Amino acid sequence: MTAANEAKAILQRLGVAEAAWGGVMPTRSPIDGSSAGTLVATADLDAVVARSARAFHAWKRVPAPRRGELVRLLGEELRASKDDLARLVTLEAGKIVSEGLGEVQEMIDVCDFAVGLSRQLYGLTLPSERPGHHMRETWQPLGPVLVISAFNFPVAVWAWNASLALVCGDPVIWKPSEKTPLTALATQAVLDRALARFGDAPEGLSQVVIGGHDTGQTLAADVRIPLVSATGSTRMGRAVAQTVAARLGRSLLELGGNNAMIVAPSADLDMAVRAVAFSAVGTCGQRCTSLRRLLVHDSIADGLIERLAKAYATQPVGDPREDGVLVGPLIDEASAQGFETALRQAVEQGGEIVVGGDRVDRDGCYVRPAIVRMPAQTAVVEHETFAPILYVMTWSDFDEAVAMQNAVPQGLSSCVFTDSVREAEAFLSAWGSDCGIANVNIGPSGAEIGGAFGGEKDTGGGRESGSDAWKAYMRRQTQTVNFSSDLPLAQGVKFDV
Ligand code: UN1
Image (cartoon, rainbow, N blue to C red; front, side, top):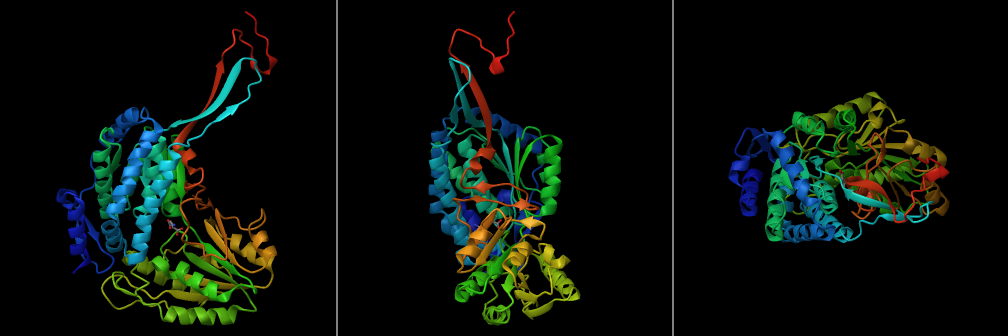
């Protein structure tokens, strides 16, 4: 069956109205290029934002644990639709089956996290310097949140944002990537079931907006949306951030990564080889956290590269629906061209292709993941190419390796493979990795939802998902209450009238 026909059957089963995908924007499966339908770009953005603002008026009055109940129901509905939604992720984004399932599992996990959080939106009490006064810090709902998501995690990233936003009292407007709108419509249908069971949620609490760059920019410019959470390329994030900053709004950015693994001489190489394979080749190199740079001690480089080349040569590339396939397609032709261009530039800049780098001859955009040995971190290495290219560089001194890890514009994820406590702790120290995520003896991708997810520099600085990322979705208020019958001023100021 074509990927498109399978997708249509799932959309029908999940209750997505056919009218929603009967318009003008074609959607194509990267698996075989078949088209599952055409979408209509949302025309009346003003009405969408107005609906969201009205929903906020009601939703902020609902007690947080009750808001958590909606997210609990969403988690239940996601469990019930897990297989269908995961399959749709496979069909639309080209992920292998276990990664599609893993993505929906991330949604379920973050719902569980958010439900607990709905009873733990803790503030502070502070000692006042004035007698008979109380000071508190309280977290209040913020307002409509715009979520701009990328094709590579078409549904999980929405869930990281939406589950927190909803318990924090904020309605959500979702502009999915124009490459993966069907999974968004399907997720909205799943949420609609949770909303129906919940009963009295305001209309417009969660809306999906279909459109491209202009749609994102129009919404980002809207003062009624206090927070814009955007995931995607650094170029897109810079444009969105400037629009949001111009109206002094808040943005939460999760942008490009250029993630490295340092391999020290004491490393367990069996583990390192498996970690490289999953993080560099998994999702066809299309995770923000994909491994892109391998920094190996020069004494072990030749042996490690040989083992990796062997492992790469046996990785089955093909239809991600088939058993045993570990590498599916790139998302589209532009992406395949980006892969080829980067490899050409790498060779021009002194690189040597060790394995892979060619197209696979079949419908869809299939390539063989590449390993390229580079003389140094040249311009192409500093750039994030969203495709399975692993650049290998060598070092002789650990401090030099850390400096290389940090010497790129992006700062998302990083890791070291070592059995030395000194090296591991130095990597995690103030003068170690400069990334938002730093791991020891684990690859850079596949983070759990419980931690704060995001990174520094060109990655944008935002944190999503676990830990205290929820605070970005709320308004901090410092409150002072005078329960005395005096009016003392702070700082000892006298002002008697
Ligand atoms: C992304 O690539 O945008 O850590 C998100 C990971 C996943 C999320 C990645 N949990 O690879």
